[in-house]
Image 1 (cartoon, rainbow, N blue to C red):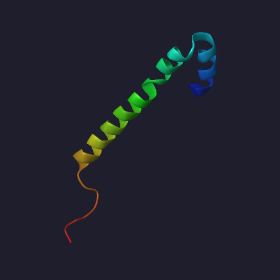
Image 2: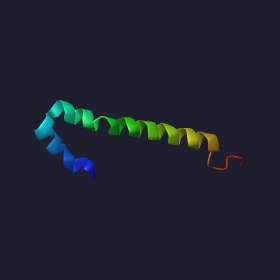
Image 3: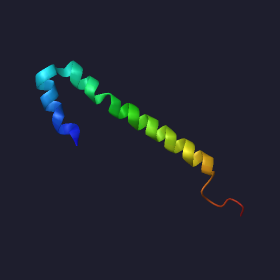
Length: 51
């Protein structure tokens, strides 16, 4: 929802600070995927392999 702020930040502060504003997104995404991966590993396989 804050993507509309990008042109405003760029006009006021320049691209250096605009990229700094955007940087947490991928970092938080990586952290979320790592957390999800660890939760799925803790549950074990989700299919029956006894057959």
